[in-house]
Image (cartoon, rainbow, N blue to C red; front, side, top):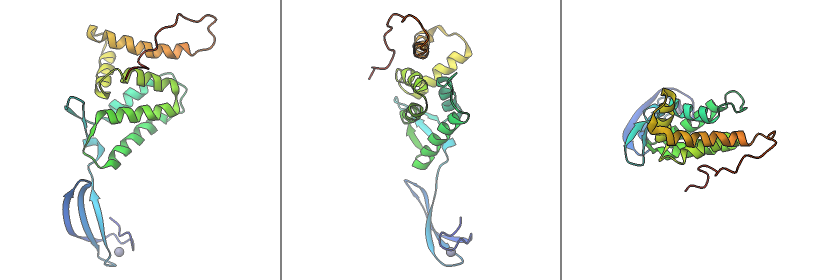
Length: 189
Ligand SMILES: [Zn+2]
């Protein structure tokens, strides 16, 4: 921890206490005598997501990445965009200094970012995500899908396929329009 005034790295802790922002420490620079405050924060790897029903689960960068990757499948995105989105969301969460965060905050942050980079990926993510209670349910579905067929998840799978179909509809070279399917998910809530 460098002194913000002289840059010296030796300081003495004069006081230490818990606060909402983390562990607050008063320090005194051993070189110039300046006093400053530091906060020790919880890293995102131990961040807990609070689901709507009150259950908690550890934030998983990998799960978030998997959900966003699936939404972006076969989309012409520059390399590194998905990692950047996940990095940004993770650092936002870390910067908040909270140890618990509602899971929908993460899902909404992902939707906001996808909206900026790719409309189709955004629609895929949003139309599936919004039909579930929260990102957790979405992730559970992704896991089920990746494991193989589970009859219980058929309705959810159909929804996701509808979301993918939006992608196909956008391709301009079709001579005839398909019958107008209801737009999945878009108008809910
Ligand atoms: Zn100093």
